[in-house]
Image (cartoon, rainbow, N blue to C red; front, top):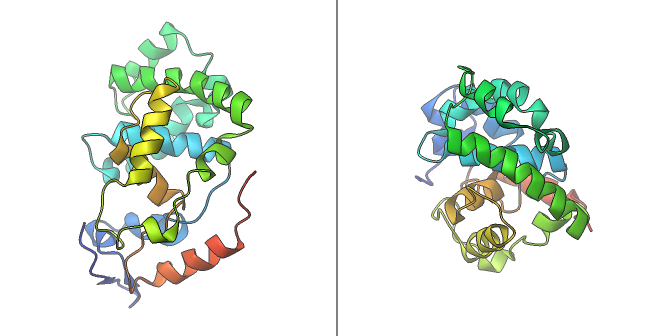
Length: 203
């Protein structure tokens, strides 16, 4: 990933990946890197990162609303009740990525999410316990995995989760604000820093 900032159409400097498509601008400015403590959003993002495996985030973002409709807003309590008939229905849904393994993984992981909530109190509490120290971070946008993402991936797999490799987990951490990986010079970097300072880590 190129860490050199890019000047957007409004004159603001942003992470260079924003230049790929106009749809990335609002996602970058309002979502990416801002801390999240909502279990449904955390589950959704981990699922969507799993769907992205082998594809581009542009493809997933364009279909995000379709994914939300297909998976009951990513309410993992509802998704955990999906049956084989739901898998077959989703395989016919042209609005999402029709990959049997990834669809089945979302349903499987929904049950694992329920187990994790029972064991840890909430998904948010669990994930934020894995927030790395700033001293352990690589320079912004120079890494695709980290010691933390490797450890978190390993623990999730031990708990039975699927499609949660270290790269997928690292992208999840970047997006959900567990790290601030906005490029140096990006206008959003300071905003995310402020949001992270105000953010109350879930217990």
